[in-house]
Length: 487
Image (cartoon, rainbow, N blue to C red; front, side, top):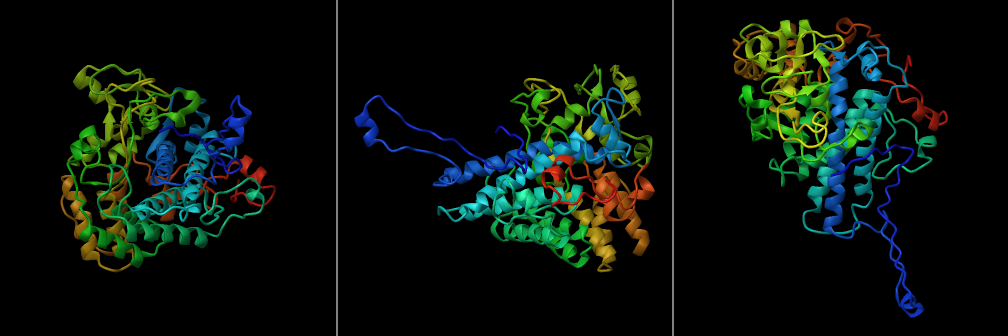
């Protein structure tokens, strides 16, 4: 699956225009011009299925959401080779980013491309009937909700257009929607997916009822709608097919798409890419970017040493917490144990994100850009912790919140807790950070709970809760869209 960037200002997806010609005037008289474009597509099940593949394909580009989202938090530093190596990463790390930032542009462009591709299917959802179409439409709506929620997290309310593609000129006439309007569409899409999907996907990597329920619970949690969040998440826990797996292998190849996986972005090392088109890679680009610089040794491949965990992130774990050394690699200890050698990059801390370090494999092309490690976008431990938070912060059921929290702690080798109220809330927050470190959630957890300014160096309250809309998008709107405050 090839992927490419779609921007709101370049939004018509034309498949092809094919004109048959011949040497004989008689032949031309008998041959009608044949065209394939967006308006006469969707004539068969295959057309819808292939268009759905195109929506899923954009998920692979969202590696930047994970990498940059973690750098923005207090878990990691930007890293790299120098202060000018991927300057957009450096700016986000230091909270000095502006509306001119190529990497934030990528977050906007690629997620909007996902919305646009989903809208392409939905615009023509009634054109052709076939058995199983509701499943395709439900998956499409899940994916639109996924991409829209990402945009909402990063940039705040965005323009929405219902079940239609954006076309050139819309940026000057369609305003940014309200927060409630965007969340209403997300919730509607996810409810449709819940009602029309099964817990088991027709193919590995496709959306399920469980994925839609988990994401809907998360959307409610972000709005502090604790009753709604608790309801959907506890229903998922009680009825879904998920369970905690072995943490030791969870982020290895054998841990992909296992019983803990609620939704996973699929990657492969079978098709290479280059720096001129990172989104063309079928591999997880973020993994190579996080690799150990100039590494030579067992298990891992070398990389570019971005997104390096801080000392404080490593020290937050108790010594008996099995997650510490399976989540964060202490390179000095590893080198002493294995004889490996390595180089030190910019802002070197001595630690690396072990969950998504490049493992030795037979990937093709540039090894750093085609890593096959799947991204565990939603896993069952996250569901348990979100449910615990909703139950506790909503004053619904602290005992059940404890039970869910203790499931996660027990796997980590830690004792059970018996706290309640605000003390339990704080433990849940701490547990989310430890369990999900390196997975791109921390910054947004801090923002949604009002703790970002107290924990992130350089964070300005009233500004840095969201990132700036790319300047070019503001300019193309010709005053129709207001920039986010402070930018």
